[in-house]
Image 1 (cartoon, rainbow, N blue to C red):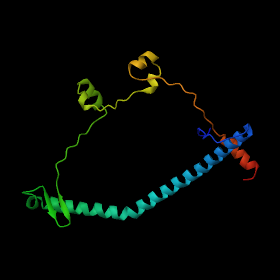
Image 2 (cartoon, rainbow, N blue to C red; image 1 turned 90 degrees about the horizontal axis):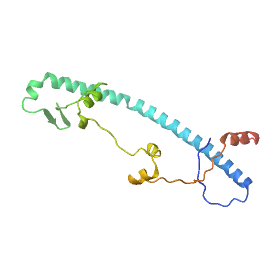
Image 3 (spheres, one colour; image 1 turned 90 degrees about the vertical axis):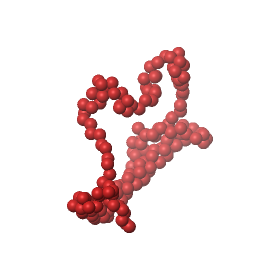
Image 4 (tube, rainbow, N blue to C red; image 1 turned 120 degrees about the vertical axis):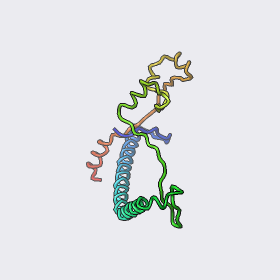
Length: 170
């Protein structure tokens, strides 16, 4: 099944006109699919090419960083007796105090058991699917309202459009 569209209100005179408009939608969707597919292919090629071009530079940065770290470690007593870093004309190097928390699969449940709720992140938002089960009075009490609409749609039968293209030799 194709994508649904709300039509603009251009004037169509007959069911045949509507059918041809649906065909045009199907053709446009097919063309968009091709355009998107081509773009995604080119984006993937660019990413691959960029990764290859930058590979040597990333490797050089990693190598030089490791050499600087080895130099710093070897000369730690002399270089870092007063400061945690050394500033030079082209940059600085040294040590920073960092703190990392490592968790296991059991951590979340243990936090709950110990009632350390402030350490649990929860994204709260209304669940509209669950709210659809509520009656209108309850919805009103929570400042929500059920809206029932009769939205118009049209969707092209892309398989039929493809058959038509093959039949007409396009």
